[in-house]
Length: 529
Image (cartoon, rainbow, N blue to C red):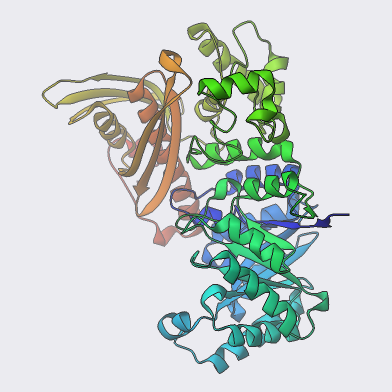
């Protein structure tokens, strides 16, 4: 019988640390629910000491998601560990994950500690975590570049102090497969008391080796793998959950393992994460990319038509991907729309379905075919879970070949409509300036991405924006047949997030939040904002 591999998903912790992938509380909860449906065994959902928002997210997910183990990260010090436990203690099954760098490079240049000091810190921190929680994971950061004998000492200290899981991370994606496998085999053989301790992998993709090294870790004795949906994560990313899971499922002839992952939820998980972060999955991404089951070469098409197994080692249905791109049309009803959203991992409430159906009907009147990408675009356009301070009523733009463009914008707030216009080098920039003038809370564009959703001339423009408001970054994403309208909606979405977070901060700490005031914002927030 194949041996079970435990899937430790760190999408909401390590994955969220990748640039442009930060999520708010509501978005983290949405993703956590989908990861629960996916069947992950352990869900690492935050680093509570880093912010009140992260702490709140860990606390909320711990209270709601009851099946999997809920883990939170903490550095090897008392303050971090106590904060992690305060966030986790409502979980049905909690795990404190503490870590400390152990390579000589990190000891010399980052920690400025001796090996003896590090061993003492490991013992104390794991012991403290154990006093709070029976399930404790320890990671010797940069294990892949740590002296093997010292790594054994560090792992022994953690096991003696009560660690139940030892995670050996290739933090910078430096290891070759043989090296990573050997590291696990040595720790398993040389560290006393490993009988009740699980070994775990954690690999990064700096050299494109994350998944390969994860499999090497399994060969070396690991039975837990740390990974992320779509492989997101620091720098080049983490090992991709969907790739690892499907490798294990398809290659049992060489990998005598199994997981409890519901593979038909893989595509939905990928799509939801992409929608929440605004980071699109590359077309040629293994398992969940748009081209994963597409065939253009004539020889391939001929083979697939005769028997799909000629060029497809897995079926689209096995990972929950659509087998054809035509999903719905203007004659489809609410039930069909609701069912497709469920299949895509985004079940709708009745009010949400009514709003989605209204937008769907508008789109179906303009397009002969409606695709899954369009359905996700409807969610982006029609649903904003944070309160909207401003709503876009109208945007008009005029572009000129001499580089000067003008945009006029109408925003609504509590039934009042405000108009403004601006001139800039491009129509999108002019629209942004108009929005800034109305809201009185100017932003700075950090990332502006446009791509087409759908096929051919039926496609719509999808715009992703990351903007800074008073030093804090917020994202927005929207779609429209009009690029300027999509850009304005995306920018306003990010601005509304900034306004919302500032209002929360103002209520909690009135003296620490910058106050903005102009003749328009004074109407909304008396005394300035």
